[in-house]
Image (cartoon, rainbow, N blue to C red; front, side, top):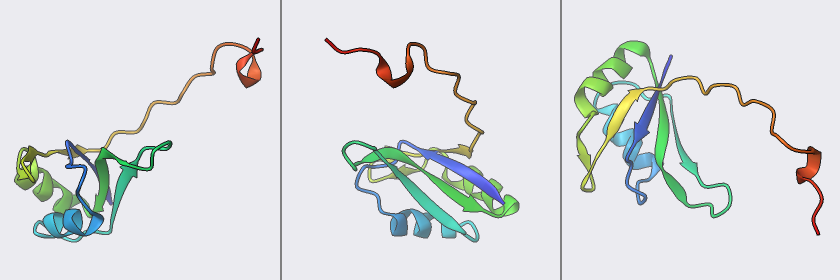
Length: 96
């Protein structure tokens, strides 16, 4: 299983639209559109899980392809580096 990062996604895109686009290149196991934690609005990117061979076909076929006027950036997702400890006292410090 390979996870693809899809960037420059139109804010109006739905999981069904993304699934339909990627299914043209193979089996799609899941689509996860990332929303802003505070506003709940889409952040303009998503992750698509596909079998490895299908994922490579999707990268080759969809990277740079326009979706609602925006050229998609499609590549293999990378692991997020571990976050270091936050600086400052726990709980954000004192407030005056």
